[in-house]
Length: 502
Image (cartoon, rainbow, N blue to C red; front, side):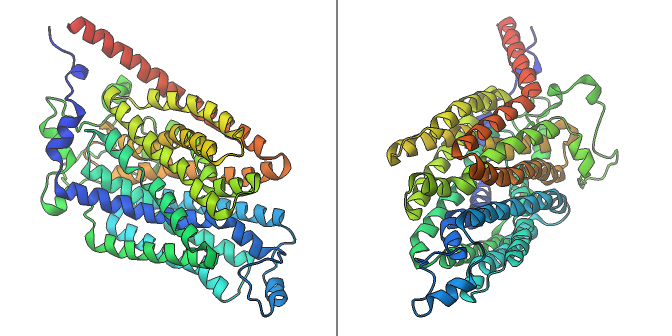
């Protein structure tokens, strides 16, 4: 008997090996480290919050004030009467950054699909580095402290940093097809965690000289990375004469080639089969789809809402973990910075392993659901972690595995799946727009969350902050539950077909 189409798909690793060139490796590394540097500069801010809070409040042991006239300089930098108000303002800055970052993502995705991705990415990296330098280093050197100036700089920084993720995901989507996408993107999406580790390492190394030098180092490295990206990044295979992914898919459509998008027409209703984003013309040049057209693609809204809840939790660890360790356990700031690295280590391992499992199953949602259910338990366990650095590090890594892993999958592999599904087949210009929508919606949730975290912590304590994280993680599962049910049914259906085929 004839074998159904869904059972004739090639193994994912075959397409991956046969199409990999040295250009793929260079693109992988350049996009990986470009976004790592963007995240490193963000991580610097979270790692020096204690030092900034001390500088902005009455603190007789302020290490950044010269010894000759400590009172005058202390009084000039006295923005807040106590550490609680300074902490609340730091949370407000996180919220401001994420809101502007979210708005920028929606715009940057559209811009990235219409302009050269390399230009947009390098411009964002270099200009953001200048803003970070002005925020953390220049203001301290000039002893200029102003709340409104800080807010304006962080708004601009959020807009500029938003150019990064849609561009790097779009470039990766242009070079890597569905063949092994879960594993490749799972490994590649560790760029954010590597950036966090790099930022924490750089900040802890120079923090003893003053927090302004932490900003100086990360901003300088990021600016240099933007220059390298401008001269070295290839945005698509056609720039070096290689066939594009769409061409490979068309040539192997009879065999259902491994580059075929995971979000294929098999996964949507029959009524959607006649719907097409692409214009009915013979023009070989793909066109960028509109914002509302991208929102209407199957799965985009559900994954965007789910990512809003999940990114809230993930970014709360990103922004507040070093502060929490110092505030709750009384550990030194540099030690807390170094210990927080274990959360990112767990996220790197989780994203890679879970992406590989989703490649084997050729379904993403069930893998996410299982991981997030374990995440609820790990959050509950971490909230009761004892005052022991080894135990805290182990539970922290486990929490990062089950939260950071799914977050990396949604923002990278799943966004690429959504942007290259059959309804937009042949239009790589959907990738940045869809990625911007998913990550932008996630950043809105994260922005609201950072302010709520500071409010909950101030009024109810850290234990209620973790209860809030558990609620948001459960909401993530709830939003993707229709996709989970559908993909589980498809897995069971494929299993029955295989049994009949035997």
